[in-house]
Length: 178
Image (cartoon, rainbow, N blue to C red; front, side, top):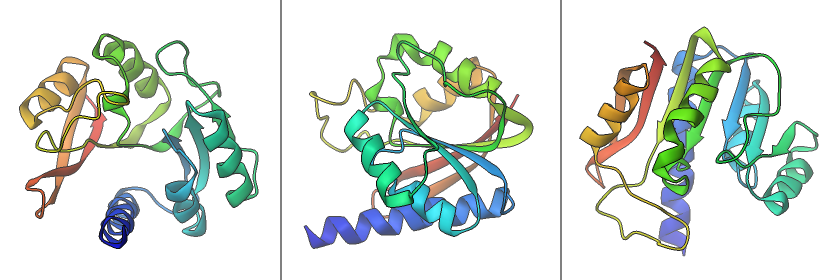
């Protein structure tokens, strides 16, 4: 509906503005869970060199089509590592972690860390625990303390929380190597 669309694009804008604060234009960015490429498209338009990854081959096909580039890859994070060499200065994971089974978190987070430059930033967002759990697609909605503990246990340092006041929960976390 129209309300959801306005909130969704406002949310993407919030993530983009946050990213611009930490990562200079022209930098290499990995968009993990890029879906149809809307966030990637905004990043590309803002001058970033974006490589996108998603579980869905259909979504990746659409991302390649709307962004007119082949830098989008199908990857199942529960079974494989990111299929690209090198590191990025910024990695974004917008509303993705809840789609992964928690037993995979340590390996996935270690893989992400290996692909992030030493001075890079990892921007993560999760749905509010207050929102209904879509059991078909989501394993869990994580509370803030659980998320902070998970990241700390896996060697990340939280440098900032960006809040969504309407939902009264962190909309995104800015993480760096610990």
